[in-house]
Length: 396
Ligand SMILES: *Cc1c(COP(=O)(O)O)cnc(C)c1O
Image (cartoon, rainbow, N blue to C red; front, side, top):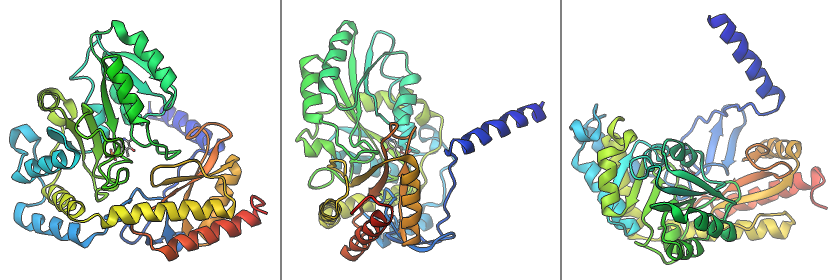
C-alpha cells in the first residue's frame, strides 16, 4: 500500500516545488531577537519575526520561567480540569482579563486552539457566523467545526458586512468575527464601524487580537483600546506566541458566561494538555512588565512610524498600515523572491510573499518592526532596501 501512496506524495510534492511554493526552513542558531545568526546567512538583522515588543529573549521573562521551572516543575501531565491547573494558570488568566478589561479568560495551548474551540460550543445551526474574508486559517477551521450558518464579507468592507448582517437577521444569534490586524497588509479591522453595525443588527463581535495585542492602542491593549471599545466586545482571542513573549499559548477572553461555557465544552481545552508552569509564570511577568511602563509599546510605535516614513521617502510603495507590519509592494512574484534573497546577502532577514498567500499580482515583502530594533537597525534596513531597489530597477 505505502509504495502507491509514496508515489502519490512524491508527485504532489514535486508539483509544489514546480509551482515555486515549497517552503524551506531557515535555521537560526541564536535566541530570537533583532540581531540573529542563521546557519545559511550568518549574522543578519531580523525583520520577519512577530516579536513586536522584543520580549522573546527578555531576561525578565527568562528569569520568571527559570524560577517556575525550579519551583513548579516542568510539565503538568494533565488537562486543566483533571489535575492540570496550578495557581499560576489562574493568575495568568486574571492578568489577561485585567489587561484587556474583560470579565474572564480561558487559556489554550495556542491561539489556533482558542479559535478552533470557540465556535462549536457556543453556536449551532440556528445561528450565524459572519466572517471577514481574510480571517486567519484557525478561524476558518474553527467555523468549519461549528454547525452555524456561514456568511462571509469582503475584507473590512462595511457595506458588504451590513448586507450579510441583513441576510442573517432570520438567525437566532449572530456573531461577527474578524482579525484585529490582517497579517499580510497590516491594516486594522475598522472595529468602531463593525461594532456600530453589530449594535444596529443585534449581533455579537469577536476579534482575534493575535497581531494587534501588544501593538495597537497606546498601551498595546489591542483594537478595543484603539477604538475606545474596551470591555464592549463579547469575545477576544489572542496568542502568547507573538508580542507577548513569543513562546506558546493562546487565550479567549470576554464575557463571563461565554468563558464559563468554553470551560465546559471547548474541545481543545478539555482534551489537550495545560501549558507548562514556566510559560504561565513568564506570561504573568510579561503582563506585569508591560503594565508597569509603556516603554516597549512607545518604542514599537516610534520605530514603526520612523521606518514607514523612511521607506516612503526612499520611494517605496508601502501599504497603508496601522500596525507593526509594513508591506513593501513589488507586485511581481519572482521579483519579491529575488529582492528578499538580495536583502539576505545584505544582512537583512525578511520574507517575500506571493500568490496564493496574497492575491495574484500583489507580491510583496513583509517587514515586521519590533521594539527590539534600534534606529541604526532601521536605517540599515532602509539602506539595504534602497540599494537593492536601485539594483533591481524598482527605484530610480
Ligand atoms: C498567529 C495567529 C494565530 C495562531 O496563534 P498561535 O498561538 O501561534 O497558534 C491565530 N490567529 C491569528 C490572527 C494569528 O495571526
